[in-house]
Structures are given as C-alpha cells and as structure tokens.
Image (cartoon, rainbow, N blue to C red; front, side, top):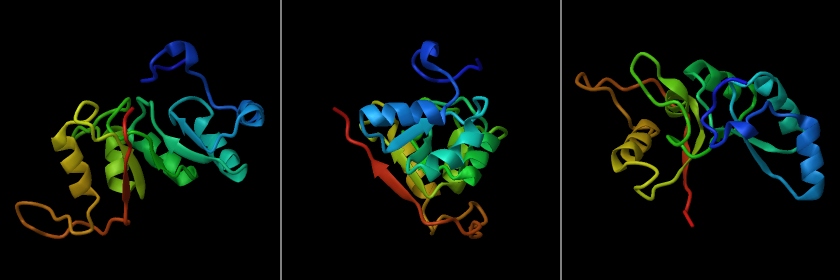
Length: 154
C-alpha cells in the first residue's frame, strides 16, 4: 500500500463503498475523509456522494494534481488543512496548494498547536476574494468563495 500520513499504516486501505455502507448501517456516517492517491479512491468519490456521504480530502501524502482530481470527482473540501497532508512548496504545491487554490471549503484547527498562526493567516489571505499578487499588486485570478471552518479541539 502506498505511504499515507494516517497515524497507523495498519488502517491505510482504499475506500470501499460496500464497507462504508456496512459501517453506516451500524452507526450513522455523514462525512468521509480519504486520501485521493490511494488506488481506487478517486473513482469511489462519486458513488459515496450519490449514497449521501460528504467526501473530503485529508490524511494524505497526495500531490496537488491528486487534490484537484478529487475535487473534480466531487470531493467537497479538505479535512484539517495543513495537518496530515502534503505541504506547500513553490515547485510542488501538494494537497495544501490544491486546497488554497481550488477549494470552496476547508477545515482548520486553529489551536496554535496543530497549525502555526502564520499558516492560519496564509489560509485566510489565500482564500480571500481581495487577495492580490505582490509586488505588482495585480489582482489574482478570481477564486471561488471559500469557507474555513474553525474546528474546536477537545
């Protein structure tokens, strides 16, 4: 199985609609977070959505292209932006880059332990419709309106 940023590789496996439906029959499931780079996970997103589940991207070492492909397949957003996902680099923007460039929704844990204040500010600025490029101050291409959900910690 490919590497993933899940806590234990024991639990890393491709998503299965049959398994999700079986688990859902035992206890209600509304949100599923998956790693788009795992074999078959991109293909299962539309089926999960059709079955009424919200699908988000997270716990992933996927690439920028994996994140964009998951959004194109119907993923609704990103779980715990910056945590347990491939980071942003100017030559390899990773899952974080896909979220900042394309997502309409991302959850972030702003407890200053999970995410640095600078990363929180970066996410807020990147998703602001008023964002502009520097030093030329030319407006950036229009971005969709985004929601950043501040997830409380226990």
